[in-house]
Length: 567
Image (cartoon, rainbow, N blue to C red):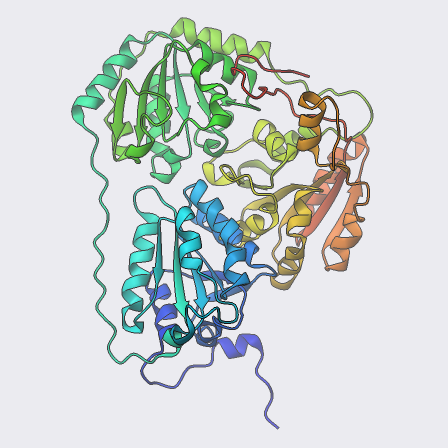
């Protein structure tokens, strides 16, 4: 009797030489684009593509929910700078991808999502698992393709990657009907892709920006995620090493300047640092690089930096002037724009001194009442202990803000979070994608007892592939951020936020084959961090904290960033 080949053996089994199917063209075209890893979940209409995967050389990660495939592809893209790839079947498989696709769209992450579709002969008949994912995806993608000719697949794949990675990055969807995937193609159409070029910055606009900088006495460098997307991190670091302008960052721009850079004053906005918000409010000029004036960053926009002139550098012209008028608008190649700014020593010694005083005056205290674990202190110690290899894959909730406020990031790729969409459930799939991208990094998913339940099934994915992801689960038995808002702005009317019936998360993790432990006392902080970092494989630290702990500071809705509520 012949032995049944193992999955690994099956993947290496060569196919009989004949004209490739559409599905095989998809796989070979992905390889042509340099793709090494894809995330997905098989099903009816996408089965031809899964039939083509064995022997292709592509590493497929089988997640346990399609949403996790999109989130993992998203973080893989953030970690590598390449487009992430996710795959799902039609109908519910495709719709399950949509939240992750929308997340990539909101945060400008390059992604190619491939969905199965019912055969063309039954499209439009409400066939089993037929859904118009092409139309549904349009608001949250840069482009959607419906494949109508198998011969055009290499061209469509090439175009999809070009669109996803050029200009302002984002997701692209390819909808692949089952019969097209099964069609054999003797002569594929030639690939014809014209790369999108980003125009160089206008020298006149650059000169105006330089004059404004030289005249400024209270400038602030306002950094967004667009700097990293444009490959301009080192350019910005070199620029500010000379200019020494006090700098602040959006949530997704963290790590562009290292957290411990002498000129960096933290995140601005709703849960930003007090020095960052006060500096922006007193500035006479904002040098805005790759940021879009998001409402979480600006607070009440009419009172945001009221005395500041604006220099706005961005690769996307649509963002310039959309929220705030730019006195010097510099659209185009952001890296070249930053490199073109030639400024000498700025006359801002008094301003830099004031910024330094604000930092000392409003230094965060890690002393807290009680004997329980204080999440900000835990995260501060964790990121220090992990060092420059630390990567936080963060879920959404109070812990997301604590990570942004208290962890140290040496590079943008060290902070992975759902910024624009704020999608709970991002953390574990994102951690998986990041750890698979860079196994040498110390990747830590920071999540909460609300967020983890959105994608807890991905513990099985961790176990299946031996992903040595470390999970810090802050458990306060409540939806903390919602509870905080209900306490402060809804007269303490706590409605549907009590998670008193949580499971024993450590036991749940162990049932998946993941090492886990629980801590709740402050003196356990150091030993817990040591154990977490020393564990070679997947591990979950179940950290119980006080349900009454809030995130501070906080800018109330409709208020200026100068009107921060504090602990």
